[in-house]
Length: 380
Image (cartoon, rainbow, N blue to C red; front, side, top):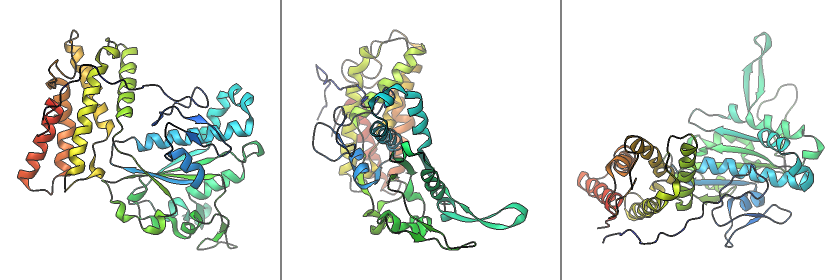
């Protein structure tokens, strides 16, 4: 089957959502989000629960999916929007919109990001023994307890404004060991727990009402099966795969940045239809990945891999500034200096790694099929 270049390309919105001020800058996945009720819910074009609503309801969510799908970026933007909603409720519109500098300062102070890894331990997140003054051994608070202390010291006008702790790639650590006795607090915030070990007196801790946890998981790094069911029920889960609209938006943003710095002199609009073709073919490749018995949705190629095409275009246009096509010819054939380079240096090595345990012939056939889709639009 030949996937032909359409005569008229569908129009993809590249607008950003500025629901609560000029710095919110979060991309809407389903239309423009707007601020509504007292819990800070947002609405889109359908009634599916979105991550921001989930964060308001459960206070603990996970964005999970294959690499390159913008989970960490989205987590930061969700934290930004959640805090902005809290601020507009706490301060009112006049103070909020009249103090954008202060808004940015509050957001910076109320978002913390933790990168999990195999060496990350209970002592890093909760507390552990450290050498203090005079060589004495004493307990030192980890990131979670320091965040709780900061929330307890918050001024009254910010008392109900959310605080967000981003737990990036949280499945790369042993979560049961890292959380320790604080594990139960994720389910029952009203019941304090006593921490293991004590100095002069026992120490109890509880999770503040306005502390939100936002985790990310790369399914390829560690299987979701490694996350036990007790932890799963403490979070709401949102799958993140390739997002066509995000690909267009991010590519457009990168193009405009290069255009402003005069590293690319041509206008985006001239070549936007070619990016639609690339988006079509990216979706087709991912459908083949989803159907493959040794792969599946968790091995989708994320949109950020395809966004790197802009930098190959920059290099190509610098050498040949009068190009009429940068990605695909009028007949839909991929150009070697751009689409071919993306395949050779990014996509093919990735698929080779994903299929490293598969029979050699089967691997070669699938990789050839993916290349044919990308370069020619042919689905065999």
